[in-house]
Image (cartoon, rainbow, N blue to C red; front, side):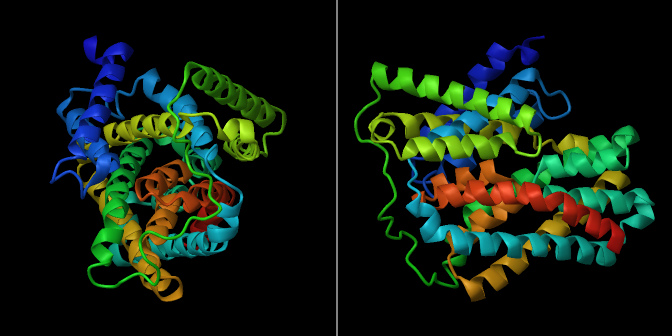
Length: 377
């Protein structure tokens, strides 16, 4: 079938990234940015059936999640100096922990306000724990809790929960992209939107040569192989943490810093990743569950909305930097990769490394908080 052909899908994704980059230069597209535009474009086509969505996902999407997104992170790490962590690591970690607690409160308040257990029954507690896990760390935590309770055997309900998660995650990516610009209309940052990034390694201005591309492809693939091998030998160490560490170490080497094109490659691959995020925003899959799907959608949306309100209010009082608050929230709801994409979109170079690190922290916290919520309910 044509729509399942990986070459066709890859070509469409590449076209949508290209259209987003051009649209970003228009008067109406500039406020939105290429990251948001590529998500919206792909979501529209996926819901129209032009490209595969979550329910009929193809191996190409899995490959993008498993290979392209991690390599994009690695390339973007090559432009980050360790001083970035010193500059923004503490506030970012604080905001992320605040966002994690806001997720727990959002789930608990949503539970008592909407009483989803009246429709979901005993499965409601497990779903609440799974959502807490995924909106603290990510899908690793979501599935860890699901496996513990054998929730994957629930068939339609399990698939419906994933569909709702995909929709809300995509919507929240859109919200966090727009949030800083909107909040600055009513409540100014303590610091200017564009802050001093002294000590942060900038991308080389030289164009990518064949020599540079050769080294970058070798380093990217080699680092990905090493990170996955270490993860197999030591399962407790997430491969993304090893990959990030390798990127950080290499970024301190003058030879690597002089290689042109790393940032451009990483950013392009990140846009492709965001396109797949948009494809996973499948409205029909949620609506097909009828009352069950609507209950799941309302419960999840309310929980994430409360998370957003709390992190904005408390984050605004403690450290009023709307860009950083949006990135920390995205690290909770969408994970480290999405948070990194947000940092790049906001041109906050000093937050690229902290975004990845707090995403890894979320993987460590998410499962514990998910089980905690199940016990509390």
